[in-house]
Length: 232
Ligand code: ADE
Image (cartoon, rainbow, N blue to C red; front, side, top):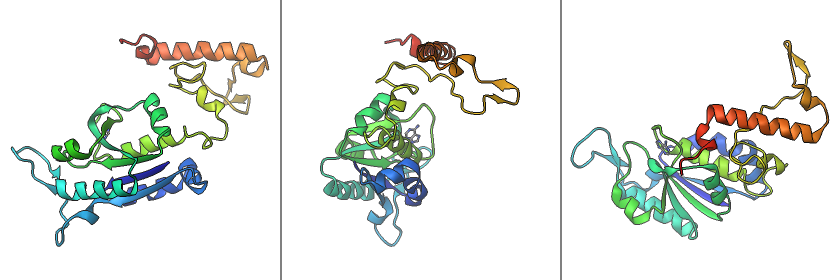
């Protein structure tokens, strides 16, 4: 997968892209990420990337010219990419969306800042707007990392043990259909007086699977009743 991230804070991504699975996927040529500074496309001497909103109101709006030039330049490098804007106004990102994105060959992620970007850029060049949740961050950089991390780990060959994907929370591929994951334990069998549940030590795989399913259902009903009884 080839990804280009457009941002006015490129250094935010430096460690992220070198670390953990993202770094490994890059080393193994399964992933290639370029980070482009939108300010490189702004006009000297001020290199201004934002301006006051027409009609008044708080905050600043990202100017159309540098952002458009940055997106068009990225599209030249990645002609098959869809252009995704990270914004709290976007449709809700989810595990199934991560699966869908993980199958794409090319992707351009546009990180909005300030109060948003000029609507004409959205109308002209943005294919899709995504939000990672109902809260407002200072910009789209952290959401871009969320989308990248959740999608890249789903690229086949990136994760060592793919069966761990089918049993995790929100999985739509395994037996744990849209349930929260059951509690996990590792050694030692007793820690500060608390023991690992007997069933997990039994070696009886059927009993263990049933225990996990029951724990998953109880936890999901308690914490996320919306997953047990979806409205739609
Ligand atoms: N930018 C600011 N807040 C955001 C959010 N919740 N999701 C995506 N992009 C954002």
